[in-house]
Image (cartoon, rainbow, N blue to C red; front, side, top):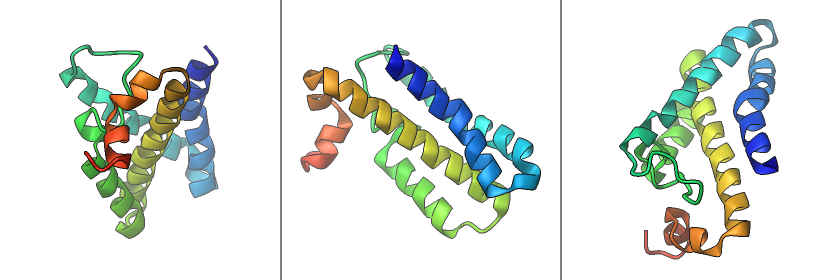
Length: 126
């Protein structure tokens, strides 16, 4: 229960703080843009099961893949257009939020970790 609350607070409330930090004058617009980056979860529709509480989405879903995360990092680092850079920040923060959720899940489910893409990345088999 606490894990779910923290997860959604990060997804919805923390991005408001990011929006404010990025531009105090336009924080509401920025918050809406950051909320729109939640559409990255549309890649869940390709999964079987659509939702599995014991599955870490990082590395499993296409828009949560290692390659996608690298693109998000490069976007934050190199894109200078304010709106597009904000989108990359939102996507990267989304991945961080999901990663935190995965770590929390792994602390209660060793098998979840051992079958995750993150395990494969860290052990050279991914």
